[in-house]
Length: 177
Image 1: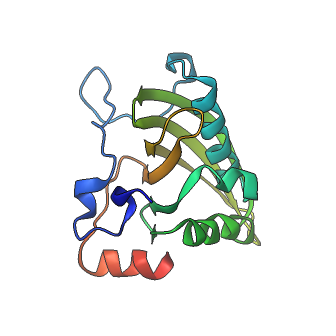
Image 2: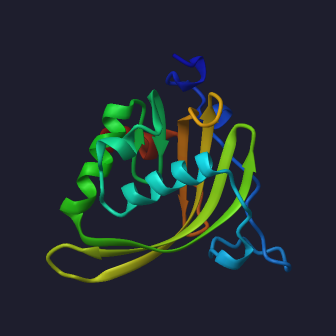
């Protein structure tokens, strides 16, 4: 079991936290531009495809296999510290949303232990059928060697906002996770 996936007293110290993508004028830019996407290996493309399928509501066992057993998932509303808890988040997507569709992606970085992309997701809420589009920066910290590497930290930042790992915000995230 990788030691870097254990719950950590300072999540900021272990999370993937790339430089925020910027426009030429210096503004933060989370809007994906697929034509600017960098090439990635087939193994990394398969990992990305599984994660995108999870965002789309698949929650299949095969797609969940990209995560290490003690992986961490971190977004504005939840903080999960095992693959089992992460699966619960993904299994909830079809219950909350009538449809969740990935509109565009742009891979911005692929280094030895990290894969980062921008993603535009359209969520259609169940019942009311109102839709919301969110632009995200998705950062995966990876361990192992291709093609067998696993996600040990999945960070999802929405609409140009980072979020707290302290106080009430962290308590709510852990309760949701």
